[in-house]
Image (cartoon, rainbow, N blue to C red; front, side, top):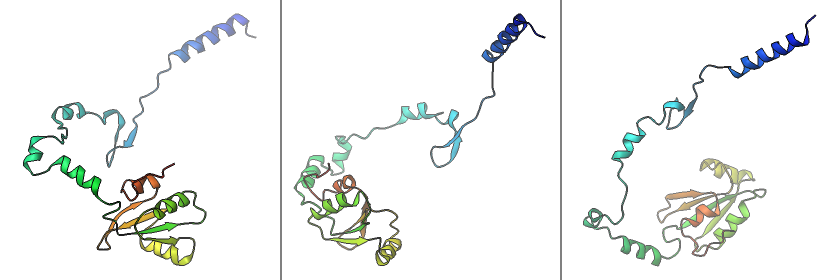
Length: 170
């Protein structure tokens, strides 16, 4: 039979062993830029690259030499009618979609014709599959020649195209 002193000594020894536990180093890999790489070494060389980095300066005199006038470009953009480049919108919606009503309301405020397609019925689902639409709501914006300009799935993304001057984002 063990005594209390022996048990206390054994507990103290185990506590000391627990304090000095040293495991092996674990190598963690992550997909950072297109391929898996050790996280420990992912930033090597970045400090040196930073020395050679060139920051974009819109007021650079070389840009003016090329015939680009920033103030003139901004003035043209401000005077442009809302949605000038977007000729039509195809809006893919679903009746049980929580974001669809906001996007539908936003599209209704534009001066651009909107074709609404319900992806819940078979015909709408086939159209969505043909255009590789995987989520509702999705708005496909078309230009003058019928070419797809962009896709948006929220009011914020649509607002970036300037289709409505006053935002209804709530």
